[in-house]
Image 1 (spheres, rainbow, N blue to C red):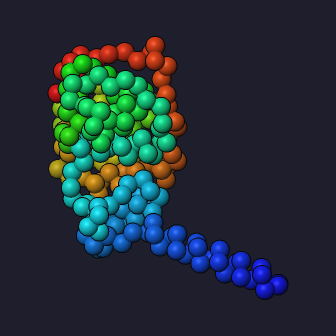
Image 2: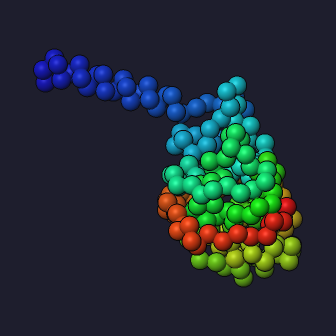
Length: 220
C-alpha cells in the first residue's frame, strides 16, 4: 500500500472516530439510570436529544409538542398542512411540527385548542405510534388490566396492539394508567423497542381532501 493510500485511510478512520464521539453523548444524569442503554440508542441515532447543560433529564415528562417533534423526526416527515389551532402560533418552536403532524394524519385539525404544552399521556402515545406504524388494532389485549375501562374507546385498540407486541407494559399494580404522563426515559425505551421490532415508521402524508376537522374540544 502506498503512502498516499495509508494517509487517506488514517484520515477516514480518524473522521469516523470523531463523528461517533460527537453523537455518542454521555449525559451526566443518565449514567447508571435504568434507561441508560435506551437513551444512548435514541441519542446516538439522533432520534432524541439532550439539553445544552449536558443532561438528558430522563425523569422529566414529555409534552405533546415534544413527542410530535420526535415522531416527525423518526418518520422523516417534511410536508405540512395549515395550522388552525387557536393556541399554536407561527412563532412557536413547535409550529412546523404540528403542521407536519396534521398532514401525516396523527393529529386531527380543529379550530379549538391543541394544548401542545400539556404532558402527553400513555394512551395518546399508543394511538400515535400504532397509526404511524400501521399496526393492526387489538382492543381485546387491554382486558388484562384492572383499569381497562378507563382507557378511552378510541385508544383501546392501539394500547392493546402495543401491549400484545410486548413494547408497552402496565404497572406492577395491574393497571395500565392510560392517562399517566410519559417520561423521557420511558419514551426512549419505547422508541428503541419499536425500532427493534418494526424498524422506522413510514413517511405518511394525507391528501388534503382527506383531512377532516374535529370538534373544538377534541384536545382538551
